[in-house]
Amino acid sequence: MDTEERLCLHNAEFENVHKDKEKLELIFRYTVLHYISDGYGWFNGVRLGPGQYFCILKNSYAQYYPDPEEPWSYTYFDLYGKCTKNVLIQSGIDPAKPWGDFPCMQEIPKLLQLYLQYSKQYKENREFLCAMADMLLALHKAEEVDRKQFPITHQHVDLIREYLKSHMHQKISIEDLAQRFYLSRPYIRNLFVKYENMSPKQYLQKIRMERAAEMLLQTRYDVSLIAQSVGYSDQFTFSKMFKQHHGVSPAGFRRENGW
Image 1 (cartoon, one colour):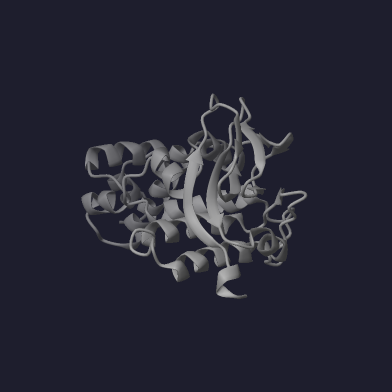
Image 2: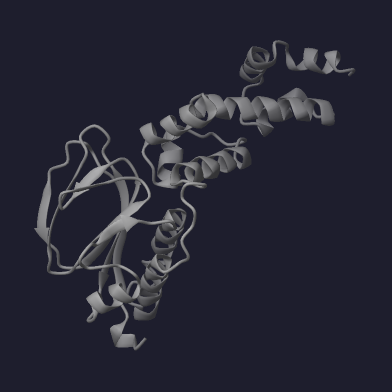
């Protein structure tokens, strides 16, 4: 594609929309693509939710607002260029029906992080801004995945599980998870209640205690070091939580298992 025909990325942000946010009725200066990570809302009279996108063309009128009961969160990308409509059509976005399912939702936070990391350094670099837009639009041409077998909510909970397992030694709150994965706190909590039958905090405690038990049996490390390795700076608090989970103190756990 000729350089002049390529679209450029003007801006990108994640927005956790408040339920009381006013209805937006605007004619947009840029073409804007929205990718819904959780919650629901209305775009030009169509109700959309997690794993879907909607596109507002430059100089077109649009009306959208959050569902008052389950307000949406989304990442949006502002694009500009001379042949916007043609480029969108080539990418599989129909200007006559500019919304639908988006199977590559897990790539959106990565793309946003990439843009935020380098945007200040390369904000005047057209090639960088075009490359960002190209990567975004290429996701619309990616091969469809079986959403029934691997729904977007399952992708989210798997990613958060893996993050918690890899970072259990750190102090982690649900606010940290919401900011890292561009999701709302209620949505993350509901995910874990649905898939794990417990809150994210309870799940983190569970995997910490399971890892601590492994270390107690497989290493000769001091209990205080094991406590720090699974995210507890205070050995007393760690021992209290361990006893709640396993029914015995860390030292007693070792004795019961032949130490």
